[in-house]
Image (cartoon, rainbow, N blue to C red; front, side, top):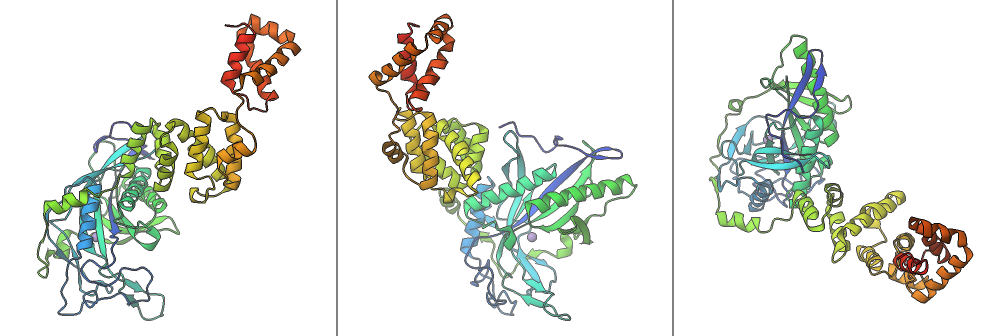
Length: 494
Ligand code: MN
């Protein structure tokens, strides 16, 4: 892993314009749906795909006289996420009303957190490729309610509303403007998703809207003043994030180079056309008339609860990569491949347990993945279990079979799911280490090839020819080390 680059340093490729290269500056606000059974302030279900308006408590419908009650589970999930983002957990925070009118927001305001979020500053490591990792600062994480959904295409003259989502808990995670290319922006989102999923605090299913990114883009000349930014709302895939950044950066460069100025505004990304379009001019915080929600006490909890949650945190993907390198002596590349998902990592750890870890890595990343690719199936469908692959490696290491025979055994096991040890026994593939048997093969070869014998005596490096012949004669079963020793003795090379 290389050193982290900092905020002010220029990195990545500049975008060429008529007046020279431009740097793109990207920050993101990610809305991540909290994994919880019920909503942030009501007991209504958060299940996806229910019939319209079936998961709606009176509070979610904005009926007068109802009061919000914070959902402990949602608060716990926010703390857990904050810990995973190496962020400061604020044991005192506050809910505010963010006032605006949407037909699918019956309260007329969103309960959110403004000045006092539950989670403060943190950071995440974002891996761009095998060699490069950048650090992206997290400014804050706050809890807020989601809105419902307006449905415009059911009737030519009316709009329907589905409040199933209204009041579902969201974590709004705000990054620092630390990203410098579309690739970095997409990698940030994908790393964040990976972290939230491994923490179990968000399902991360972007097609179900469980994670959406508001992408802030501006351009500047390297080292110059920050430009005016535009915010692209609700981008819901890594590809779209990258496309939106590319399009938006070029659009801004063209305007500035044409003598114009950038209006700070909110834009939407049209995935079909691959372009961003103006939605509305950007609101300022004061437009929302934030004020503390009088229906809710400040949110206060003990540090001991935070510590309890911290004790249950799983190993994060970046930590696992570092451990695989340190504990198993793997290259950054192999560690990256093997920790790509939880299933692969667990499979590898079982194969490597008590065995040659590098050999295990080679077998998993090359032989197994190669075979899976070729068969067009995933690891979960592999007939070769981790226990079987481990057994195969054990058979190589204790000299029962040669590495070459092991490849054949693997192929058979991959086809049938039979244990490698059984295949070796049934097909008589044990390596020949019996000296008497091997000596006879060697004697026959020496007698039949006097010219080669002369050559080897003149140039001992030519011994490989004899080793090859012994292998051929024994169907690859001879133990190469034993063969070498016998040959050297018989040809008096020692
Ligand atoms: Mn928000």
